[in-house]
Each structure stands twice: as C-alpha cells, then as structure tokens.
Image 1 (tube, rainbow, N blue to C red):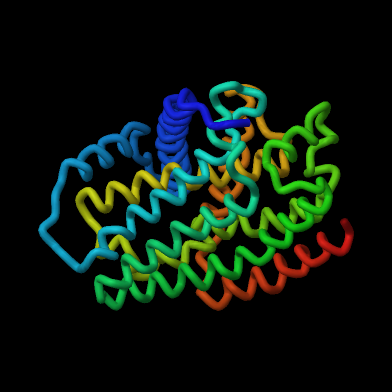
Image 2 (cartoon, helix red, strand yellow):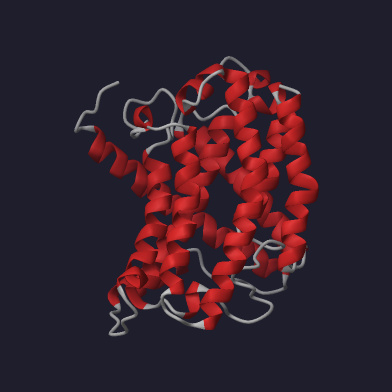
Length: 301
C-alpha cells in the first residue's frame, strides 16, 4: 500500500479517540484503586481538568535542550505506536500507517520513549531523577527480554513481522488467536506486559509508597502535561499491540473497546492487591519467570 494524504486526518482522528479512551480508562483504574482502599476516588473527568490546567502553565526553569526534549521523546513513543499499528483490522481509516511499520518498529517505539525520558530527566541534575531513571531503565530492560523472545517466536510461527498479516492469520474464529495457537509465547509476553505498565508491584520508578522520585519531581507545567498525555496514550497503544499480536485484533470499535478494557484491567487488578517490589525483586522476577518462559516459547515453535 502506498502513502495517501487522506490517512493523515484519519490517523489524527484515531489518535483523538484513543486519547479520550485512555483518559477515561486511567480514571477508572484510579477510581478502582481508591475504592479498594475505602476512598471514593476521583471523578472520571478529573484527568481532563488536570491536563488542561498543566498545558496552560508555563515554566522559567531551564536545564538544557535535552531536558525539554525528554517529554517530547516520551510522547513520541506513544504516538508512534498508535500511528504505525492497525487499530481496527480491515478499516479503511483506522489502519493508520501500519503498512509502513512492523513489529521491529513497534518494539523500538516502546523503548524509545523510556530512553528519551532518561536522557531528559538526567540532564536536570537532580539525584531523585537519576534514581528514577536508573530504576526505570533497569526494569524495562529486564521486562523486554521475555517480550522480545515472545515476538521472535510469533515471527517464526507466522513467518512475517507485519502486524497486519499477523492479525489476518488470526481471523476466522476464536481458536485461531495466538492465545490458543501459541499459549507459551503469550504467557511470556504477558509477563512483560504486566511489568511495563508500571503498576504495582512494578511501580519501582515512581515508588509512591517510598518517596516521590524520578521525572515527575523535575517536570511541571506544560512539560508535565506532555508526560500526562503520554501516560494515557502509551498504555493503550501497548495494549493495542498485544491485542493485535496475541488476541486476534479488532474488526470494529466495540470489539476494540472490550478487548482493550479487559487487557488493561489485568495489571490494574494485580496492582491493587500486591505491594510494590524492590528494584532487585522486580528484575529477579523477570529473569526467574519471564525469561525461561520466553526461551521455552522459542524452543516449542
């Protein structure tokens, strides 16, 4: 398929839908955690208010060029995932630019935002930012190991790296999904999925039960708003990847909303009932459980 300019407004419309869906899902998860703790929680529109408020603020603090580019890199990772992955399989306008990307590009975008954020926050010179960055990179790197092995197993199984072709191979019935044709690879990938959502017990970067550390201590005003925007887009984008590769994709928006909701709630439910890991516990978890399952997925293809 060749590039057509009509895809640009279509992709922006898809991005707008996913942004709003992510804002609502984030509020639902926050409300769920609050109810488990015996509190009423925030109203579902609170995230909209916070986002608009922070975008309206300006900052006079300067730490260097990379400090400003950090949130931009972070947001680019989430938006890049959306733009180069088919949101609705078979849709003429919700396919975005999936014809120009593949699984390798998707994996690159997943890590791109984290690396850019590390460079940006590190330039501030604040020790808490350095602590948060080192924790985040260590955990994400460990979590990427089972994910990369699962992706490799899927590429061998379907003999392609095209996400659209992988979704096409899963059409025709429930038991054509990768969940049933290669459950070991799905299990390995789900270890990574739960870990990279940064919810408890894997929220070692923000460490809410400890001290406020990491990029949020240094970024504020519109820069914080960019990070908030990515925080609602990136989890949905990553969930779309998993939905397409392992759970048959979505052929309409209703199916999309249901599948993304169910996948999104897996780490949310785990997070409200488990205490936070220490950094070494988190990394050990992926090396002890996720990595062997990923290797087994390769051996059984």
